[in-house]
Image 1: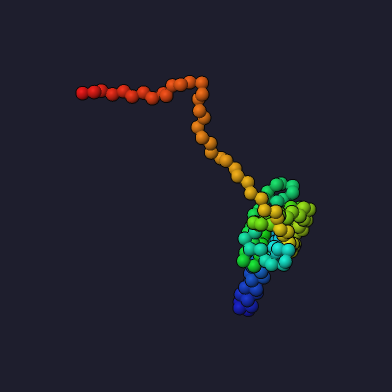
Image 2: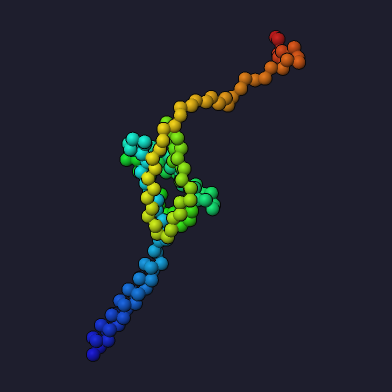
Length: 148
């Protein structure tokens, strides 16, 4: 009979391990959402290297991603909340979508078609020449030294 008690103890121990392990596994379940999509141009061609920003409407926290060579972007580990999606790329007008609601463990797909933007150029001067003091004729140079 001692072997029956040994088997019974092993079974109880294994059952306890399974129970504890399943509780830890349940505690690891994620609630995060995922957002992904494809960015295209008006002709349906893929837009690589577009900047995709996802802004949490409540907190203002901004996540930024770039589209890959296939025009695909992905955001993982998002909190369930309401977001604004902004997509920008060279030669295209920015696209914004507001009020995107992501739920618990949701895997949402939002494809974006960018429209051609107007070509505009601007010049921003960030450095300037030193100001001229027109109120004085002094040159302002002093040279001193010992002559030997």
